[in-house]
Image (cartoon, rainbow, N blue to C red):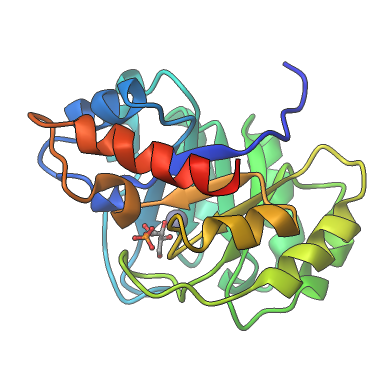
Length: 225
Ligand code: DX5
Ligand code: ZN
């Protein structure tokens, strides 16, 4: 498949019903999700625990689009194989999660997945400047990771710097945290092409009433179209 720089909406199942992931994923895909964003937290790298590779494997058959796994865990290297085996299309690791991000990215591609690197709000774009030929995605955190529903932190200048650094390489820029119809245009104009959104997509809806998911996705899309 050729590289696609059109803007994609990636709902985060962090804001879905944890007792009903399969049906939630199917509902949000029917309502227009382009990718499914899967937040893995370890209670150590971030102050919250979600789930691991076995849950990823269980939800994989329900995902028809792209499984985008965001690892907020440290150490990350011992777990990569497991998430690749679970069927992740993208595996993203944090540059702050350990001393050897270069090795981590090699391991992700070596395991057969596309490699992503995430930067916390306090980490400059330059932290990934040596990695541009080893990544398929750069994730710019626009909240401090750990929780959904936080307020957007403006990282527009960082997104522009990364866009210039990427040049014509086939590397996505993903925005994660506080994406709404108000904040989406800022990051899209700066060069982002994957918008993760948890609370802004799942608010007001449910598996038995999924229409709000579609309305929420369309509200984000039309904010920058
Ligand atoms: C935060 C997670 C995000 C989160 C986004 O640590 O990585 O993916 O779910 O949630 P919202 O869109 O509610 O800020
Ligand atoms: Zn995330």
